[in-house]
Amino acid sequence: MKTNDFWLFATHLYGEPGVADACLWLQEQYDLDVMLLLLCLWSGYEWGPLHPAQLHMLINDSEPWRQNLVRPLRSARRWLKKYRSAIAAPSAADSETLRQAILDNELVAERLQGELLQALLAAWQGATLSGKPGAAAAESNVHLYLKQLSIALDPGNEQRLKVILTASPRPA
Image 1 (spheres, one colour):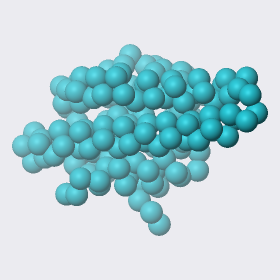
Image 2: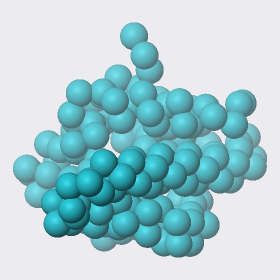
Image 3: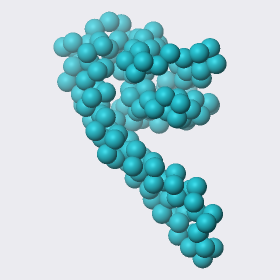
Image 4: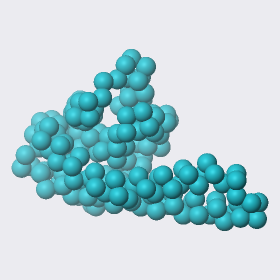
C-alpha cells in the first residue's frame, strides 16, 4: 500500500459530479469531517466494514489535527474571501494570492490528515478489520460515522448523501 492511496481515492471521488457540493453541504450543516467521510468510503471499498470502536479511534486521533490545522486554515481562507472586497484595489491581487496560498496549505493539511488516518487503518489491516470489502461496506461505514456523530438525515439530506455514495469510487 502506498502512502497516497487514500488521497488519490479522495481527490478522485471529490471531483465526481455533485460530490464536492454534497460533502461541503454536509460539512457546513453537521460539522462532519469530509476526510473522515471519504475515509469511511475508502476503507469500506478496500478492507470492509469498520467496527464502532475503530471509527471512534479514527475520530479521536484526527480531531486534534482538524481542530488545530484544518479548521483555522479554512476559517482564515473564508474570512479573507468574505472581506477582500473591503481591501483597497491595489492590495486585492495580493489578498487573492494569500487566499490561494492558504487554500494550498489547507489541502496539504487535509492530505497529511489522510495519511495519518490511512496509517491507522493499515495497522489494523488483517488483524481486526473483518467483513467483505465493497460498496455495501463503504455505505455501512458512512452510516456508522453519521451515527457516531448523532446525525440523522432527513429525506432531502439523504439525497445529498446518495450523491456521494453512488459516485464512481475509481476512475473509469
